[in-house]
Length: 158
Image 1 (cartoon, rainbow, N blue to C red):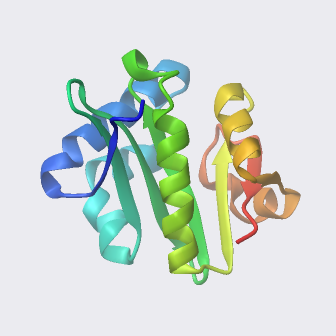
Image 2 (cartoon, one colour; image 1 turned 60 degrees about the vertical axis):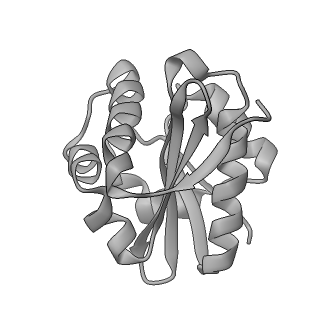
């Protein structure tokens, strides 16, 4: 979709952040306490700590995707809570969001830029690999316990 716009977080968009992520997480997994806290408090847990939340908006469909960069430790930035509404999957919204999030991560210049996921998310993992993320056992050892469902950890060489 070439008519997608990337939007920065506003409090008015917080419900879309929650809805899109709760839908895909709940569809594939169990919403864990960490998920519930971040989804209920995106400004406090991400934005106010120096992170970023972006949205993909289609002129007719509205907000169809979102993703975040969450500071998790000094010098560490996690790509997290990235999802696209079921009706908009396969449109390129995820690729566009990922590119915008990587660009923002470069500007923030963390020492470590990583993501945690699950092997059941094969399409997402393929997207991450195509964008330059690499599997990393050190990231798994350092951050993997954040989610019970995590069995894949990747880092991006900024």
